[in-house]
Image (cartoon, rainbow, N blue to C red; front, side):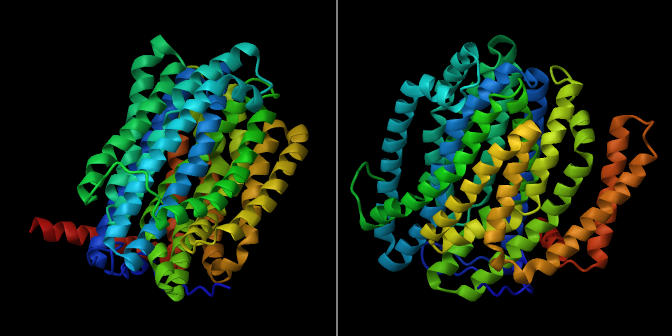
Amino acid sequence: MLSLWAGDSLIDILGKMTSEGLSSPVSIKKERLASAAFLVLSFSCLSSVLSYLKMYITTSTFGATGPYDAFLVALTLPDVICNVVVSALGVVFIPLFSECANKEGTEKAWDFLNSLLNWTFLITFSLSFLLVLLSPWIVKIIAPGLDEGSQRLSAQLMVIMVPIIMTMALARLMMGFLQIHHNFNIPALGGVVNLLVIISCIYFLSKKWGIYSLAVGMALGALGWLLLHLPYALKEIRKYSLNLTLPPATKKFALSMVPIILGGSIAQLGIVVERALASHLPEGSISYLGYANSLVLLPSGVFMGVIGTVIFPTLSQQATRGDWQELRRSFSAGVRMGNLVLVPSAIFLLFFGNLIIQILFERGQFLPSMTEGTARALAFYSIGLLVWAPFSMAQYSFFALQRYWPAVRVVICCTSIGILLRFLLVKPLVYMGLALATSLTLILYTIVMIWCLRDVLTSFLKVLFSSVAAAYGAAFMGSYLNHTQSFIQLSAILLTGMALYTLFIYFLEVQEFYSLLELVRKFIRNRTAVET
């Protein structure tokens, strides 16, 4: 059992990084690390703003219509493969590269990296070519409820987006390599570049190309992500050769990927089942789920993305050294810091989802009926956001410890129950039942790993109480502004809620709030020192 100590903040944890081996080539001071974390957070916040802009232009251009349903179906398999394989590349590569550099030396580490890059290109290129050939049949399997014209359109869109698998796989390895060398800013900036490309394609090409502009933007955005990392990665890589040898580290990497791909594929099976069931529901159901899921992923992508980017290399180093006490503290700090933002985000999306969607998206092709449908799905998805921080940190910890097969057993159990829930809930609740089943499955995953959370439960309850109390206070304020413009009402609700939430967590002495303030102060001090 992990006996977590709640005394260290996230910046304290990250400040204890070792300077041994390739995994930590230079000694990093807390002040420098705080600046890096703040910059990563800034890039992630910018990505969230751009994600909203992307959703705004997507909803106003395409709405919740048949072509957008076809696009989401086309994106399903490339997205599933990226979530399973591409994500696994990073979480397996970072601890293995650190282990190889520390135990076998730098030359072996470079051989491992060269071999891995070449094999990744060869395998993902072959897989992409195969998926292009099989796209019509794949669409029929994923969405049997779509009509023939929508299936044909979906297959064409899938052909355009399949190369994302190859470009994102190579980019993910380069991201991991830069993170090992404590370059967190470029990986965080990659999301900004990706979103800018997608938004530009929709804005400039949608009138002529329609829904194809979104698919082209997705493909070019992934390519931009890769090209951004390429010069920085090549600068750090000491030697590169076109060889397909299989050093011991590469063989271990392949064996480690087996349980992760297996577990990830089983977990993503829930998404495929969700799309298949939704294809039999009225037009727009897939779009409602897609838009609502994107809104839920905004806060989780900002904060847990930052925490994961910065803390995972640290967890891997601590696991490699067998420093279990520091690993427990890192886990605890990540969960508590994530709860600080994600719990109030979940509560506010649950309370004010309809108003938020109305203000942000209800224009152009996005009609009031679509606002209501998306808000209903959002309410059920928001429930799962409450446990996203412990869920994410438990995943990072399992990967850092390289305990892949126990994770597979958990995935098989929870995903099987999740698929059963989708079949049980889709009939009485239609698409809302699918969203609720997703949240319940996420909660089940977290409950299975609840033994990791016993010592962070007190902090979670403080944040939950503050979030609910602030939401009720904001709702009370909003009730007095029913006759004002929606934008003014939403702004008053958000400002009131943020003020009340800040007061509650301050007086309840939630440590993560003070840690966040300290991070900002350190960043300001460092910038002031540089300028003087």
